[in-house]
Image 1 (cartoon, rainbow, N blue to C red):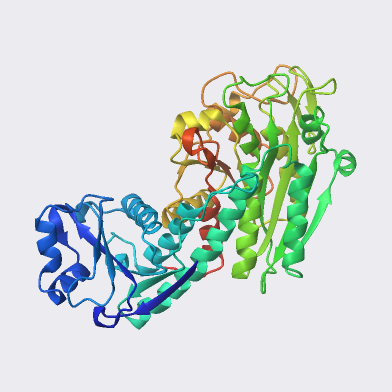
Image 2: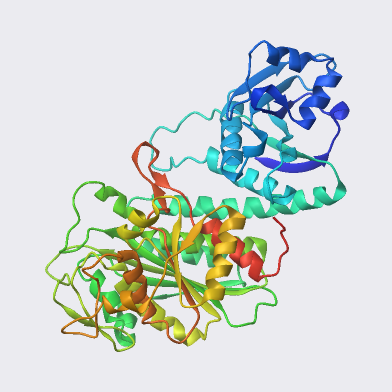
Length: 502
């Protein structure tokens, strides 16, 4: 699908479709008022007959309005003007696109950029529209023998703006929105792959393909079990002992032009399937444990975006691939593991495996002398209890980094929430037999998991994103969401100093 922006008046529209907003109680938006005037009150007269009230998501398609060049005008309800916010704006766009699927217009002029959202400018409205349109049209059908028939014939969306300044903002928003959407799509595709196809080796092949596509800016190398053993990554290795698939860590290095500073390191948990090990999970929804690699998938997506946007940054992305299965070699509750940095860990639950993989990677990345490190992991069910499926859990050893990530989450509408990591939670990880236990038997599981990881981050600035509640949807809409790719991409845009006022 093609996206563009134009400065157009109603008198010079082509014969395609227009999208116009109508507020609650049949209140006309500014562009609708102009259209109504041109048509000698045709729109207001139609509305007065009760055809559309203006509630959020209501639609009415009008054909051949008098004195109006476009043959189709889609009216979309926007609710009460004073209550319009980011959530409703996205809802309106989704409804619009799902309606356009059945109209048959190949080109549509989008006038919803005129809608007023508090503290949101043209750049934000256009970029979120691009991302939301791409999200609405996404479908994972790679493994279906019979594909769905392509319904949507829409080929082009033209965003209408009023000034040259807004035209430049819209062009930048389209560029960013398309790149971020491509990263989110890649993340979803990787996450949705079944575990009999997507294992650590499959992740590594994608890492290599990324390097091949963006040489010389991206290079990749792999660390297998033999080298992990030499490095002393015993905790990482223990988790994969029960699987016939080799544990593999894929290291992706992106060097943007001018990106010679200390690297930003992103670590993605890549448990391509998590049975829980000997502490086996209940059967309910266990199929969704293929999504335990969404952290790695999101890092892959972000690295793709960085390359497409040619960000002037030095970024290292790590896909920590592994599989937690059960055989005679599986690690056990009661085992004591020696991590790469020498700390010993008492295993109380083999289903708390992600932190054992990530802790060794956190030690490994010290060699890069990073500017900062962010790990992304579907780490705890406790985070879902705390924040539901709306917010990503954020914990950090640095308030400034935490604030930057929260700001990026607000800009991108990919929300996160800070949870505390105080000494009381740290103490809950005490062990009678080792330096620390891998779980706490007391409440606050999302926080104590982060506290565990924090013990391996003493040498750099670090943040942890628990995406257990946000990385995928369940039920009838089951599928990967691509979060927190938008937030991390916005964080990198901000770090790169690329202005995108919101």
